[in-house]
Amino acid sequence: MRYIILLALVALLQPCCASCAADEPGRVTLSAGSAVIGEIPASPGALPPSESLGAAEGDRSGWQLQQTVNKVLKAVSFADPMNGYAAAELGGVYRTTDGGQSWTTVMDVGFPYYWYGVQAFSAETALVVGFQNSSGAGVGRWTDDGGATWTPDVVIDPANWLLGLEFADSLHGIAYGNLGYVYTTENGGRNAADWTKVSTHPDLGWLAGNFTFRDDLNAYITGIHFCHSSDGGLTWSSGPSADPTFDGGCSFPDLEHGWTGGGQISEPISGWVHRTTDAGATWSGRLLQTPYPIRVVLFFDADLGIAAGGNIYSSAGGIWSTTDGGDSWNLDLDTGAEMSAIDAQAVSPDAVDVWCVGFLPNFTGVIYKKRIAPTALFSDGFESGDTSAWSATVP
Image (cartoon, rainbow, N blue to C red; front, side, top):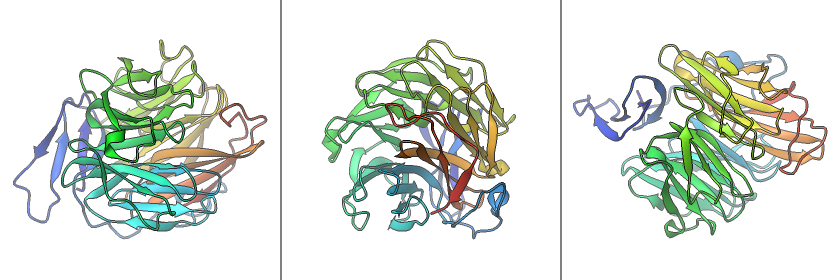
């Protein structure tokens, strides 16, 4: 196994099984509790060759798989409708300049690097963050020439991994790590000293999934707790999770309406979505229940949204959409892949492109793309529209 187990109510990192066979990857376990919700790699393993592409293979209701890559994709970010980057485990970064129709490798440093977050600022400039698995450090690297060259490691935290990244603008950014830490920058984050380490809650409970960092510097992030910051991540208020178990991923298109996903991969394997209409003071019950965790959510307004997730160990995953705020859902695509990240860009006043990335049980990375046709874009560039016709691309 090239993955480690992440258990509910996580307390700390600790080594696992020092007597493993020499050819078995070493592992580190985050544990406390009994509900397995996800797994994080601790050492390299040979990637199996591409085999069956599962439910995503071929033409299914208009979907077309265009390309495969032998790395686990964990993050995607577009600077504009044409230029984007995708980040992967085992040191991989991919770039597209044609809206996702084709992707090229712009970094492949291998083990011990695992990239779990990416931010595209322009066609040429991007930041990836993740961790150096030999040292345990949370690190980032910058490119200013479209990935032709990258900076040396920016060691943001020498003792904790980085697992997600989002910028509100070119200067204000937040990365989150394990044990409930976030790292904020107000000047672009080019150097390690530009990042401030902040705890979201005294119990250091873990964070999970995608998060929201708005251009008004309100930030929302989920996990063991529901966490909100109104000052760009410098201070946080933390309350109970929306779900009695825990949450995973959240989206706030405005200051009142928000959604969060979640799920577990221990029995009963399941996932869910909750909604708030009062800034997280109260939450609905489970509006969507799936046979795999919902890991990312993205809402464009109070009505139109996307939820995605999966579990590679049960060869299950999919992308769902709603046009009524989550009261009802449509299974857009049964991917058979664990979907792990999502991003979107307005391409015109009446069209938005959305990308959702993930990986199949054989560790083949996939990217799916969909164009929606809003009736009117609101201030953040999105509004409700048609969610029926996706197309698929893979780096």
